[in-house]
Image (cartoon, rainbow, N blue to C red; front, side):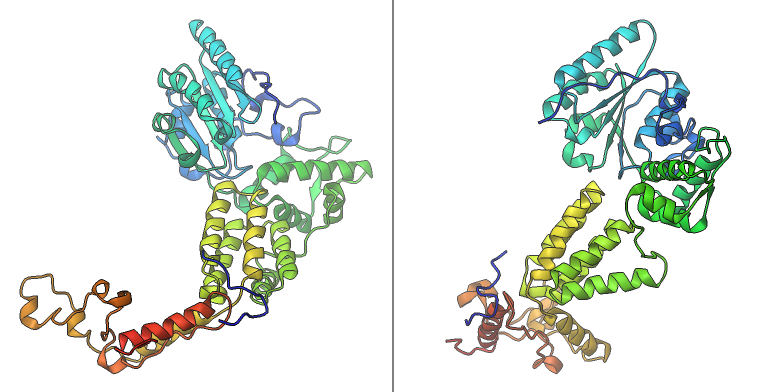
Length: 463
């Protein structure tokens, strides 16, 4: 096989260990000056939680947990959707002691110290809610330390993770807990939080103590920049309010926000023409093998707060539609990227998406798969279907042989090269030739193999 412009065919396919100080009461109690807005505005009751309505129905596990029923739960969801908030509300509503540790910084010794303190508190009749953030970062040994405490209900464990616990948490610990999946917050959810932060006494105020006004365009800008992350939205609002206050203005504009977060608002409307223009340019750039343009449009979508799962789905479609058999590794890689994105969310998902985009942009291109299935579908829709040849019909049921079903069938594995001379298509389509491979990438090898297979099927010597 001759080489093309690209040469050979594509091959087959240290941290600190300090534990944060235990927090008595609830995070919802904090409202003193200097505390971040995202902390001050944390809901104090389940009723104040936005989104997650599927977890808040009467009699739901979350309701029972907040009423004091002993159980341990894993909260799985993307960043900024309320995992820490739920833990704090549960602690507040049941008046249990609340302790928060991070799996990023806590070691086995730290976990044992927390459990020892919980045992001591329990002797005095006070239960402990242990909130473990980023629990997927705990080693198996650290998770083993938690197991007896959960099994004996020494603590009510609420563990938060942005990764699927089925892959990162030991089975014994997971089986003794409930898994609650949190959904991404919608723009309406985030907008409601912004309104609350502008009107609530815990929210942002001008130096004169008056509420700020948020322009409609500025609100849309915050929603884009937040990308479904409540914490990020409130942080940006707080910084923007501080910027407006510094120039003695009570109005927060898009310019105020851009200056506050030190980035220009990306001109990208997720519901209007820009949404479709950018995704169209993104796909066409990958199809056109322009890796730099592909990354540019990817970055625009990321910064605009586009759902990473939507981007991943578009990459998977392109992998089949525009690459196909020219690089058989493209679709598995795109599918793996989509799964990874769903498990980790932003910001890490941006790296995974870039990985898939670079691979697909640089891969050899072929639309032969699209053309092949299109031609086959066209024949079927036009009624060119015919009868299944008798040797290929099901011969396993009683009486099938009386109809000649299966008679003359040649078992492929008994033939040389594993391909028997045999007709598989109906008589009306015996000359159909749907798949026409290109000479790009791996598909160039397919061209030669397909020719030999066709010879064998027709009983001709492929040599």
